[in-house]
Amino acid sequence: MLKHRIITDRLECGTDEAGRGCLAGPVTAKTVILPADFSNSLINDSKQLSLKKRESLKSIIKKEAIAYGIAHVFPDKIDKINILNASILAMHKAIEQLSPQPEFILVDGNRFKNFKNINHECIIKGDAKYLNIAMTSVLAKTSRDEFMLKLHQQNPKYHWKQNKGYPTKQHREAIQTYGVTSHHRQSFKLLPDQLKLNFEVQ
Image 1 (cartoon, rainbow, N blue to C red):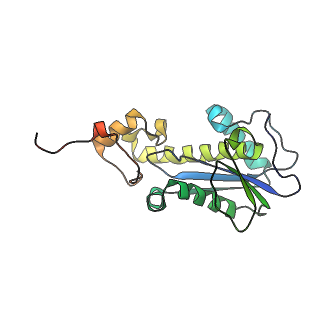
Image 2: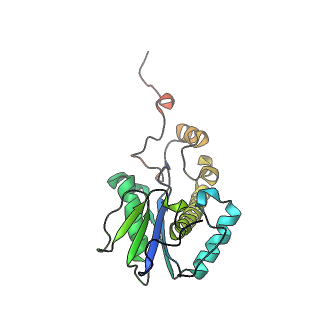
Image 3: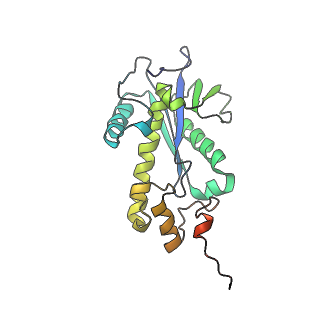
């Protein structure tokens, strides 16, 4: 059973990100403030839910939440500041969209930077422990998946509809065959060593 929140006397938001381990596409953060009486028996970590259930919960969250925000940080920025900083930046950008602003921030993971002097707490595997983080996990994944589907339509040979930018064998083989795009994270190891071409004469 997920706990509703960690602070009961202040307006609390949960925040989470999706796409941190991908080779292509943005890292996407979501944040949500839930009503005190919100409950839903379906909710869990988004990685444990079917696509159909995630889509159903997305509609419920958008309808019933007090406020929610979404933000993408794209590969050019990821390459400049690294994926950890980009993930936190995406969370900050999502929280900035909340109206009202939260009085406490519950963060999935173990690292965060202060946001506007609002107190926060990091929870490892928080998406499997707290309802407001689990809800943002659903929103972040569905929002990012939708974005990657649009990119797939522009670049179908990378199979982003299926792999969502993650380092699958099929994705890496496409990189080897067709090269990289502006949607790839140049600072990531896009190909394992055994797929690198050796141009030296043996």
